[in-house]
Image (cartoon, rainbow, N blue to C red; front, side):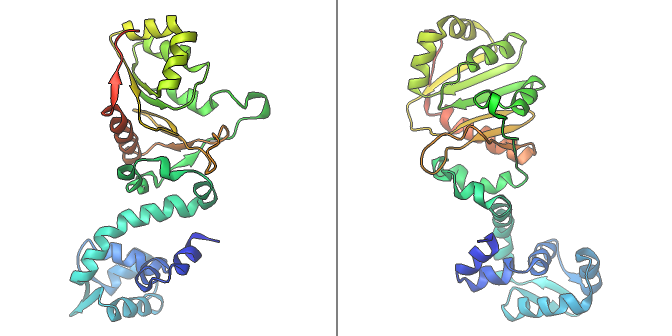
Length: 271
């Protein structure tokens, strides 16, 4: 089922009115800038009067748009609707463009406050799945982006044997690195990578946190990119594909996700 058919199945006349027509949706967002005449509307939407006037008529009939002299403006109801449309449009673009991925992964493991802003990842892409000889190694694109980052914040709910030395190497090069892990991951690092952890904690440009809350995903956000690994809906970890985002609003979302758990964690300063 396409995402637009999914919307239609929700049987909401308002959702159908706005989102089942690109012209109506784009027109409402355009009118948010202020009153527009028909020539401005045609030029902005790259359309003809014959194509757009029926859509304007529907919006007027549902009291979202008024006509004043030779211009069209948003009604008070239209203003209220459009205020929420940008977030909804981003959400539809995130889920609609990659519906199968999101439907098969545990979106609910993201905190509600961040989940409500998931439209901020509107321009996200997906990492290339690794070949079978490198299935359990960090994604090539992930490591390449790390090498050009000046700041790294990461959350890990899984243990990866390459990560302790990888992030230690970046910290030794002067990159600011803050890592947050779950108690099981922390215990394994203490036992198997005690020397690396001690070196990491002794550096001035590092922070290390342990969070007792349930965390099922892993993510890294830097000044260059965001990477998010979600588990499948059945709880299995997805080794093949990471969500990648490079936009300022997407990076801010990633920073806020890290801050959410950092504020609920214990900072470790020594083993």
